[in-house]
Image (cartoon, rainbow, N blue to C red; front, side, top):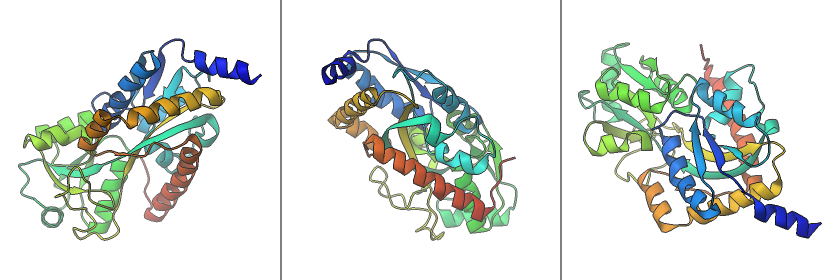
Length: 308
């Protein structure tokens, strides 16, 4: 029996794998997924086809994963929304803990606060002062209602005591386009989405949203150290399969991802994108998702955040 199981695992994958990224092309999740899975495809000798299925705070894409045939040929690339959504939506078409099998928590991402260069604010305190001087006049791009960056905006507004309008776009890349065009002035955003524009001077990054500074942008202060003590919002990127997927298939993908994430060229690319490699076991990722669901439920409940 063991020999048969081993042969079965060695035969997988025998055809291309579909990786559903529940975000439109060009955003942080899409960029990081492609960095990792181009190399995974090379390693397994099969193409990994990235299938962007954005919309509804990642619910559309993740429902497709949850309801796919559990044969190892459909994977999903969830972000923090997987843990946020149960706190915001009374009814979801799938249960993250029941309908998805954890494969790996791949990396922790970096969120930053960026502004249009026409805005005369070069620090968090200057932005707060500007918002207080012109209540309701500033607009912020958000990559979908209920996304962690949207919650980051709401947390910022509550802690700073300011009024900033949220302008909803269908994904991080369109939201960044709104900021670049000047349609909005502010964006709480995943670093990979806007770092090229920041480096080119087309946008100005003024703070990191996480609990500590990033090695990718060491001179950028956190929002917490800029006056809003206790403020922290971070992103993560993982891989899941439909529940019922063979443990041998899950272990194979986990093992190949672990090798890819150890490659110097992949590590260097992810560092530039502000991503911190985790490369967890499936079991640790499952435990992490359960604890993150509980964390966001508490934050949303205490802050009274609702999605229209």
